[in-house]
Each structure stands twice: as C-alpha cells, then as structure tokens.
Length: 349
Image 1 (cartoon, one colour):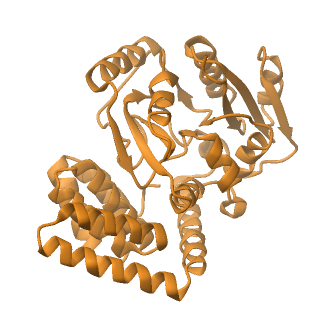
Image 2 (spheres, rainbow, N blue to C red; image 1 turned 180 degrees about the vertical axis):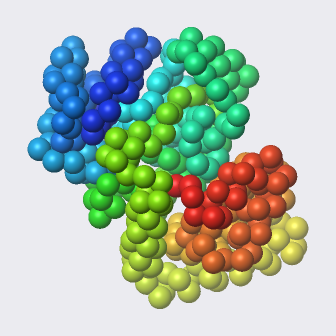
C-alpha cells in the first residue's frame, strides 16, 4: 500500500476558492493522504472553514507569512512525500495518481508537477476554457489516456501544484522566506533540489486546473504592484544564487560549457547534454548554461523542454540578447509566442 502523501494547502482569504479546492480534493483523491491546511492570517472566515474540514490538520498563523512562510508551517509537521497545492486550484478525478507514479518512477526524481491551464513555462496548455468541474474531469481523463506515463525533464516547476519527494524535503529543507508574499520561491526550491542531485519532471498525463493569482487579488494587489513584487523577488533570486557560487565553481562550469560547445561542433549532442547539465548543477545562476542547454535540446527535437530552458535563461538574465532571441523564435515555432512575449516584457511569473 502506498504511503500517505501530505497535501499542504496554504491560504490567505478567498474563502469561496478555498472551499472549491478542498471539496475537489476530498472528492477526487484516491491515494492515501493527510490534508494539512494552513490559515495564513485570513480574515474572511477561511480559518473557521478549515477547522470544519473533517480529518484535516489545521495550522493557524496570526499574520500572512507569504507563500513560502505558509508552506513552511505545513512542511514542519508533514510526513512522507509532500504535495503543495494552491488554494485557487481544482483537481480532477484521480489527479494524484499520475503525479505520484511519475515521482516514484526513478529514485533521482525529486519533484513533479502537472500540466495546467494557467501556469508559466512548459507546464502550460494554452486555449483551455472550462465552466464546470465535469468539463475539467473530462479533459483530464482524455489527457491521461493520450499521455499515460509520459514524463518530461525540466529545469523549472511552478509551485501551484508540486509533489516533492520526502528525501528532498529532508535534504533541501524549508522554502526561503526572503521572497515574502510570493514569487520565485518555487524557482529557488527547484534549483536547490537540482543542486542536491535531483531531477525535476513534468507529468504530461496529469492536469490540475488553476484560476491563478487569486490570493494576490484578494490582498488588493493590482497588476502594476504585482509586477513590481515579481521584479523585487527576481532581484533577490539573482543576488542569492550569484552569492552562492564560488569563483572556482563559475570557472569549472565555464570549462564544461566550452567542452559542450566542442561536443556540439563534433556532432556529439548526447555528450553536450551531459556536460551542460553538469554545468547547471555546479553554477545554476548563469543564464548562458540554460540557454545553451536549450539550444542542444532544440537540436534533439525536445522542443518544449528547450523552450523551458530559454525561459529560465531570460528569467536569470532579462538582458541576455541571445536567450531572448531564442525564446522568441521558440515561441513562434511552438505557437507559444504570446507566452514568450509576456515573459520578455516582464509580465509573467
């Protein structure tokens, strides 16, 4: 029998979305799980509703600690593998099974996320419109049937729904609360996981519906302020990772990148892939390594994963012209130009 998964749902206000989310989890989760609900300083009745959910472990905070702080309250009491879930999501029937199956398919997979209708990066499925839960269920069933067992490596997962292996939680620790209200804390955690030697993967047969940014809206944060918060956290993110990398690590990663370029020239793309993956593991903050990895993946036909690498490169260095051109070209080729342009103009997390 599978070990229970700890499902952590942090929330600040937005009672109606919280109710929808939790009712779906209760109705459609077949695997053993423990529900950990974090009331992150809510003032609109969320805390009382959480207390009424049967079987849930409820944690109350007197103030809003932000996404990372709320998640950490849950992580401190969680056991086993941990599933982080935003309170503005709707899970479909049998949603957890393909995500858990993906995580357990290899010992070096540390984190797994599903596809969604509202998410930045490679997990996005564009053009989806749903009016009822039944429609979400039907779409998820079709996706699961078409893509059963399909798994894609990535260098970025979005924290709206993310399953984390128990060993990763123990080794990597808590989320970094310097990112305050939210933004980039999931990027940071993913990089920490990769630096510890674990893979990040997308379960392409799993789907979770996401309304998107409802907590920010509920806090009265308008679009302009939201973009400003992201810019502030992007700066924190870049400064943190640049400080962590020693000159020796930077030099070693540069040497690996140079070897990768030689391998590409010789037609040995498999070797280039290994070298660039190692360069990123040693020096994850350098945009050039992610951009060059994307270029190799593009040559190998792994187009969506390449797009995700170009996204990472631009997020790490928004002024990196080559990465910006690659992201725009990839977006054009994949029909994801609007997504690419949104990131290039600094509008998307």
